[in-house]
Image (cartoon, rainbow over all chains, first blue to last red; front, side):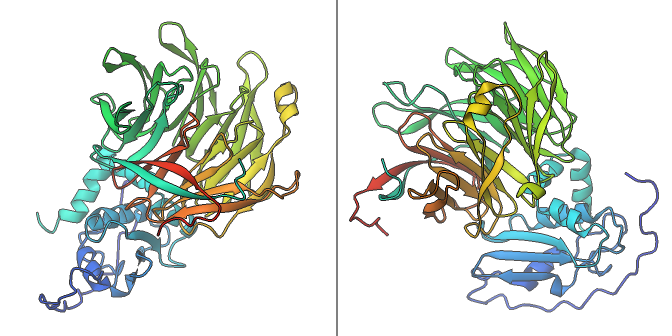
Length: 155
Length: 356
């Protein structure tokens, strides 16, 4: 782990007001709703700062796109700075959080927003290498960090 | 048998359940599945175990005969039987390679190979069973000599890949080693004599190579062609001159023959060439595809066509496809859905259409 924060002064935004979604929607279980997915991930805590990914504008409602027909979900996030070394950790947090959230055949791709990272291609490649993701989540240190990011709001 | 005129069906024979996490690889045990010897298959998983399945001679169904557990402390990523079938090597994210021997009814871990700095991803035995190769995320390829008494000695650590090495595979009849990597290249390694191994060829983008991670490679039966598959959504066929390979002196350069693109729309994790010449692929779109060489292609420019596509072969990504070498046209597939499936390639009479 590097000493000192990568980005010591992030810009923090207010949380967007949450819209209550109807619970009696007959198609609630069939459809994969991008806003529902957003609800799952918006409060993930940033690995370095005591704020959520939403508050740091790493994620927004527009971050999630779903193609129901193909069974694909694309999440695009914006690291707070161009040389963010936590981008892969954020990717791990997103995958871990979403792992049981939709039908098994759905494929999830995670990318950094175009132009938002100096090593965009390299980061995207790592974020989507399933074997690298699996191995990373078996690493106790990374696992610990991911757990903290996912569950700190509950602690 | 003509692969061009007939139509085929991939019939699902059985679903093998038992693993508690995704299944990464399967390997058929050599010299089983014919002449009254029941077919045997090993599988390995994210649940840190290896399972050995055996086909019952009476019912034809596969049953789990052994669970190899409490040895690896992380995902077991791949497994490979020695050519004699006496030993089973397993590669794990725990940075070790375990070697198991069938003792009575069970399997015993008789050796643990350490040395890789982190996840070991693949193992391969050479044709004679005298050498074992391993590779991993530490970008290196290790060659181990098999000594009496289940001893293994590292004879070379090969550096050259600039990223995670995904798979190693020995040539089917020569002691030439092939590796493929996250660095988008395939490397060929040969020995100068006296354990001096070095890279004799690199197949990169500039050589009509892949433009993203190369996940797997597989040789045809004669060993003069190789298929590779990639995150770049293509399968590539490479060829070399058989006589030059076999002469052993001088390098036998591999050249790109053909690229199969437009068939896959997600990462292709596995490719395996059957003894009959059918290429199977397993991909992240949950499908299995079979390809065969065109009957009327030129000798120098063979072409390949899609024989069939099995949509939704599994509920999730297909990580591994392996043909049995027993000539029984059985194919095993492993998936993120935690199951292994056994398929049989059935050829249909010319005027029959496969059932919907």
